[in-house]
Length: 151
Ligand SMILES: C[S@@+](CC[C@H](N)C(=O)[O-])C[C@H]1O[C@@H](n2cnc3c(N)ncnc32)[C@H](O)[C@@H]1O
Image 1: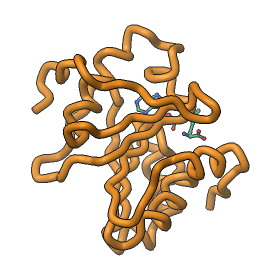
Image 2: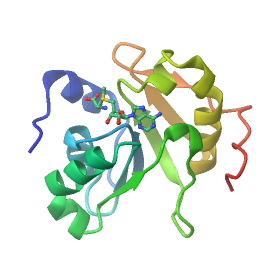
Image 3: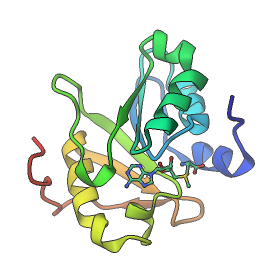
């Protein structure tokens, strides 16, 4: 079971969490931060772990089994630059990402498509926080059109 490192605890502490919030973590495998976030948003909230790694998603589901079974945490295996929420999934209030190249500047070509997909997955005015700040920076999603094929 992945432990919450001091780095990730600092990130989770910096998120504007409250009970009932729906939170999307990009690149969240193997689930250490997501599990802590799920505890903080409580049974009325929800966390979706989006990760492109099938092995990472499998590890997340194993590490967070109780939360998955309780319907408080779910997973989606897809790249952030080319994903859409499954039909019927309510949009998310908040998204965050740590050490994900498509969002932290390492893969600039992917950034626009990733922001478009995230904009489509969040409520209007939803917030994206990325670990390019101290520890997090808010990324504006206005002006990023949904990626082709996204709802
Ligand atoms: C360096 S790890 C960081 C994991 C965790 N967020 C942390 O900070 O400890 C990056 C994670 O993001 C995932 N990832 C990288 N690029 C991605 C992308 N474009 N879309 C979705 N997941 C991605 C990887 O599969 C991996 O699980």
